[in-house]
Length: 112
Length: 111
Image 1 (cartoon, rainbow over the protein chains, first blue to last red):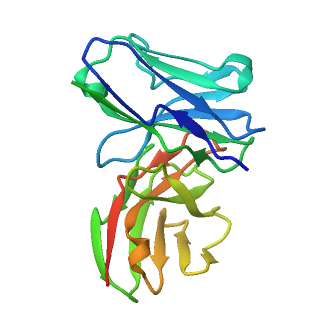
Image 2 (image 1 turned 90 degrees about the horizontal axis):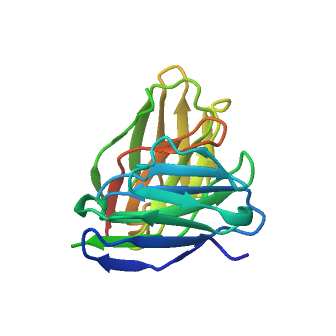
């Protein structure tokens, strides 16, 4: 069974530029999560989807971050414009209802 | 109240020794406590998990000990091997919603 797929794996951009990350969850997983992991810290949830509905986006900086999960499968997380402090690893995870969360390899973002 | 506190921040253990990592939480509504292992450049991978209705769970060389009254849980790695060198995160969640992670422990196993 394929795991959570994320792309790109690495992204380097200038500040104020836009950037987007893509996630394909494990087949059949209804719940999709986006986490941000700063260097040397544990991941922190940005947004959680149940199918195509964002059910917890309380930690998403909505002035510059947006996310979508069209058709309840793939998801895209966007930052516009990026700031220096956005440099981090962006992790996508998925799970069946009330089950273990499985993480993708992440996208390492560097904002210069 | 949503925090999970993890210690130590880093740990060095000799090959064959026992590695112990501790976590404490405040939110008594948490009902699932997983441990994740993360290698450099990889996403966190589930190692072992426990629910608060049991005090211990063992899978191979990995054991979780859970103390509900003290609101603490720990990971024990027996016969630690160089391949166990990684960063370990404890976490907690309520109803499989967001995982609240500890700060992580960088474990180094010396050969």
